[in-house]
Image (cartoon, rainbow, N blue to C red; front, side, top):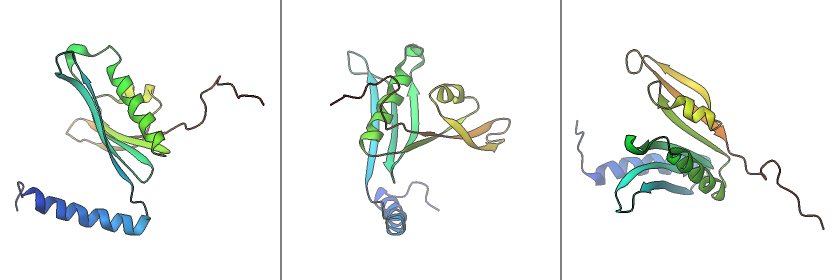
Length: 146
């Protein structure tokens, strides 16, 4: 047992899993995702982190400082990450959230619950959400006629 193993050991194990996954699926393209909100002095006010693999965006972390919540930062971070994912040929996105976090926020953005883990932590629920990323023209976009 070594919860603080050197990064080289952790990377070796993760690479073993990654190489297996690539071998089985044929999907080798991987892109880390990171979008951040900064103030004029360069202080971090929030951010979104995740990764793209197998044409899916996984949003692993989204956070905005309480002092600047309610100003649309989280929505803009999600939109930016989804646009980036579409540029990288993603078709879908997924994320997780607790019952005491942001499920209604994600649902307003078009995510739907596809799984739950009840009583994690005790008295709460862990939700798994997904969204199909729209890659076609937005409604109302006009086709250019020739």
